[in-house]
Length: 157
Length: 435
Image (tube, rainbow over the protein chains, first blue to last red):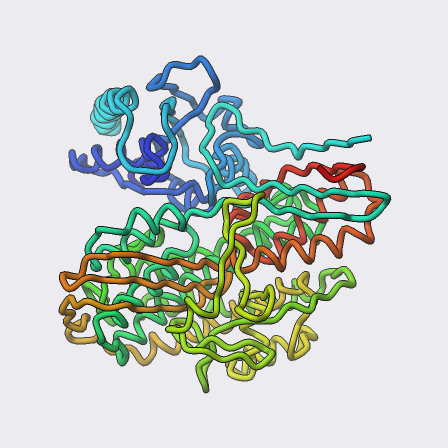
């Protein structure tokens, strides 16, 4: 099974779409042996997407509270408390990402490794396009994940 | 004295936005004075957003309104556009549309039954807790949902926000082999769905009934999904083109969603219970048998039993999908040619959670001048509030936690879009003077 890159978000809520945009830009780079999935955060779709994958890279918008600089990038591993269940993002049709992870754990349907990239949002009002700080961060995340995918492929040889 | 109880909805580091509802209950002198359900309604933004866009963009743009029922938005949009330009799409393309819609029903109903609604009846906080005790049941639900997703992917290009739908038909017709590969999973799903009906029929349902007028599309001889004529159980029948005169929406101060009523009448209810009441006789023999064995009456007025109706519809949608695939012949071409023309068009289809109306006004170049989208959740809002008011009135002795729990369950009976998160409700109970 391939590495899977999952972009989560709502493209019609400005910065909330950063996960989708990052995943699309990575897809456009056409990396080999990588599957791409767009998600609105719905947990069963996420579980199907990452079930059994050697590595799942998830990109999502983050709101870590007041005072956090927009565009700040968070990198969380599988055992980070934010992914331990009962917390995390709650979109219009999603449950918290932590709950999706908890459900997958209960069903033994986790990827072998998971990395979550979160980008602090500035504007999640209705509309398309990213705010400048988040756009800048999206570019950095694309570069970092692209490099990671190359490293991953070499490591798998 | 004021008691305030906030549901525990922790939106910590990874916050997304919106999708939360709030319920305000005002109690005075031991009686429920007012119930206000506040919900978020995305289509209002999309109505403005669509103005000035090309008619051909509407299916793809409106699909983004909802991740759970994008096909409903696409189908209603296509139908309205085709009505506006004066073409009719049926035959093999119409059957393919119905097949795609079956995929959405399977996926959406499985999600709601297993992950959102069943935990209420079994005393679990949510699907995670349920999975720890009943892994086999949750696996069955996920298997059902996955089959629906596979069907949507095969016909629509992908499960979330399908990309193969266009005004006039499809960009590409799937090859017969692509669809026949789904027959085995669908046959497994049919067994799972029949077992689902038996399982949920055994739940303990509160003794409660409503008297809402029931509205659904009706199409003589079949269970209406992708088109039909609006009917109510009290004899109102109207063409979809009468939407603007008969389905009236108004703002209420406490919600961003519009409340809908029928002109000269009152609140009404749309969704599986309404469909089952108005078209139940046209369900397949197997689905009818499942309903009979579950003890469903011809008209089900206990909203808690909507989970059983949803399970019966699951059986039907799977059977229908199997039949459509077995008889499938790819449409050539997969689209009816469309010439833009000025006009007003109406569309109505049955989303998993109820009737979804669209109306578009196009100029002679096919540019959208105005849009009206009437989603099922806003149509049902007044009925949900009425249920809550009457249900809570006899349970005011419950403590805050228990009252919150039963209120959420009442709301989940209707599978509103906002309920897709298992816990979404903030409950404020005010005792004393109304503000």
